[in-house]
Amino acid sequence: MAIYCLDAGAATTRVCLAGEDAPRVRVPSARGNNEQTPQTPSSPSRGLAPDWAAAEEVWLAALAAAAPAVDAQAVVITKPLLAPERTTRRLRKFALKIAPKVWVCEAPTLALLGAGLETGVAVDVGATAARAVPVVDGRAVPHAARAAARLGGDALDARVGQVLTAKGLRFSTKKAFFAAARKVKETAAAVQSERRPQLSLLTVDLEDGQSVSLTTEDRLKIGEQLFDGGGIDAVGLHELVLAAAVAAADGAKRAKLLNGVFVCGGGSLVDGLPERLGDELRKLAADPD
Figure (cartoon, one colour):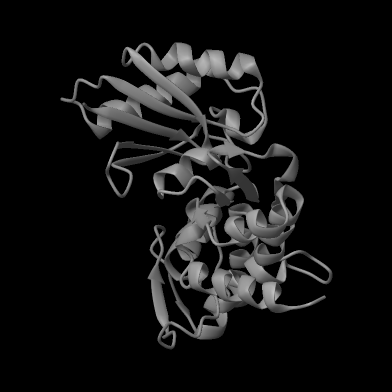
């Protein structure tokens, strides 16, 4: 049975067929031409009232591009944590246009279940923030969820901007600047990890014809924000995960949560992130304080 999976994130909408390891299609979740800030919100994931007509247009185009010849019998579509019932109803109504069977599921729960886990912490390093959401026996624990905007993709883009500015790059429009920041982040961002070979100099060709050479220090400056939080007394990703697990359970259940950490979202592709997060969590767990 063909099953569509549609994840409408804050920045990107992704579509695949059930059982596939990676999205077939990635498209922006926003529409418009404003060069400074977005575009009309086409996703409920930003916590704003979405333009439903625009959202459905984006989703239908993504579904058609993913598998134009597939007659799907079911659709799995994600919703934000604590989405109101009206959002769930609207998502279900849309999905029923595509297939007769529909499952609207909270994104963190779906991420963990897709990894074969019923209990764990889904760590979504998304565009607007990083979120650590405990899931126990297949159900999210909303009151224990923790989020930090300074650990999201937008904050990493700002850190990339500092690196590009220091290297003397100039951009004619804000749209070009943000496009360059995203490409550098997705191509070169890295964190310290003892399990990975030494990082090397990397040259990134930008869409406007410029190029930038990034040293190991440059690459780590971008990614390390995920663990230093971008400032004094800021929370790192590992501390966010531990706080979520502590708030959700104690004893053996907490240990099970921390043994089932699953990293997702665009930021999960930062070089060395899963290994570094595991190492930092083990250090925190071993610290008696």
